[in-house]
Structures are given as C-alpha cells and as structure tokens.
Length: 170
Ligand SMILES: CC(C)(COP(=O)(O)OP(=O)(O)OC[C@H]1O[C@@H](n2cnc3c(N)ncnc32)[C@H](O)[C@@H]1OP(=O)(O)O)[C@@H](O)C(=O)NCCC(=O)NCCS
Image 1 (cartoon, helix red, strand yellow):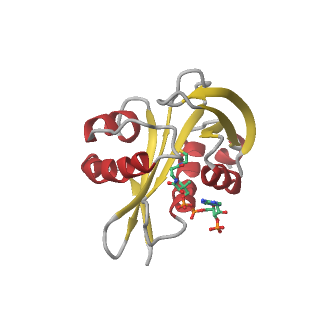
Image 2 (cartoon, protein in one colour):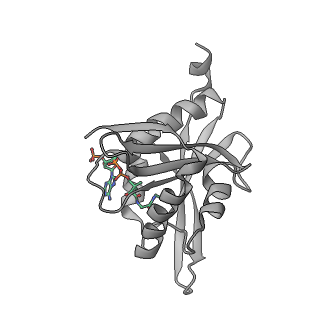
C-alpha cells in the first residue's frame, strides 16, 4: 500500500472528525479530551484562520484518510513558531503515516519562513514523545502539572524543531 500526502480539503472534515474522535475516546495520548464536530475541527485544525497548513495522508489504493497533521498559530508562541499536532488512524494498516506527513509539513513551514515548529505533548504520551523525538524535535521546556478533565495532573513537554531559514533561499 502506498500513502499519498496532500493538503487538506474542506470535504475531508467528516472523515477526519471520526478519526480524531476515536483517538480522543481511547484516551491516554492526545491532550484533547472533548469530541469535535466537523465544523469545530475545520476551524481549529484544518482550514481555520489560525491554521498555517494541514496535510492528510491518503491510502492511495482505498482512498481512506489514514491521518492528518496540522500546523497553526498558538497563543503564547512567537509569530514565527508554528504549533504542530499529528493524528494517525487507530488500527490503520499503514505504517509511517506521521513521518510522511511531517516531510510535507516541514517543507511547507520552511517555505513560509517559519523559524521553528513546536510540539506540546503529554508527558505520559510515550508514543507521541518518541515520534517527535524521532522526527528530530529536541526538548525545549515543561509545563508542569496541567490538569486533565478528571483532575489528574500531567506535565506537558514542549519540543522544538528548528528550521533552517538560510536553506529556504538557496
Ligand atoms: C504519534 C503518532 C502520530 C505517530 O504516528 P505513526 O504514523 O504511528 O508514526 P510513524 O509510523 O511515522 O513513526 C515514525 C517513527 O516514530 C517512532 N514512533 C512512532 N510511534 C511510536 C510509538 N508508539 N512508540 C515508539 N516509537 C514510536 C518510531 O521511531 C517510528 O519509526 P520506526 O517505525 O521506523 O521505528 C500516532 O501514534 C498517533 O496518532 N498517536 C495518537 C495522537 C497523538 O498522540 N499525537 C501526538 C501528539 S499531537
């Protein structure tokens, strides 16, 4: 099976909301805890005004969306630092969804002249931490003891991926 990566389209929202809500319902990874509607997902992560770019990974045989990666502006981050989120379909047969998406996001962030990409990950999300580490993100800072909905305190680890601005002009 082959993966195709392309920019998100407005009509992807219903399929992506199911993919994301399944990850939220399973729990233990993403910091997101409330289910999304397609409209709310589109505004927050797909095509809204704070979205810098968003790519989807498509199984080129079945046409099914296997994941998405969003880069957006986030309060408290410098203007030239984008905030990333990555979501791969639970139980998907595809491997390498996150890394295929990151190649596209990284190239687009460079093209737009961003200085760095920020990832904020729950400290108990070992898979997410390993994924971003493998992509080349380095530890940047810690937001200690951020409460989940049920009151459980979980640190948030911020990792940064620096972009080489000089490389964009050559
Ligand atoms: C984190 C996530 C996006 C990774 O997506 P993925 O498609 O499985 O990632 P890839 O297959 O491209 O993995 C690339 C590398 O990251 C590392 N990695 C990914 N998931 C990992 C895991 N659960 N445990 C350890 N390492 C992991 C591996 O080194 C992997 O390379 P390898 O397969 O050659 O060993 C996916 O597991 C997911 O959607 N998790 C739930 C949502 C979430 O936590 N997102 C991150 C916070 S926004």
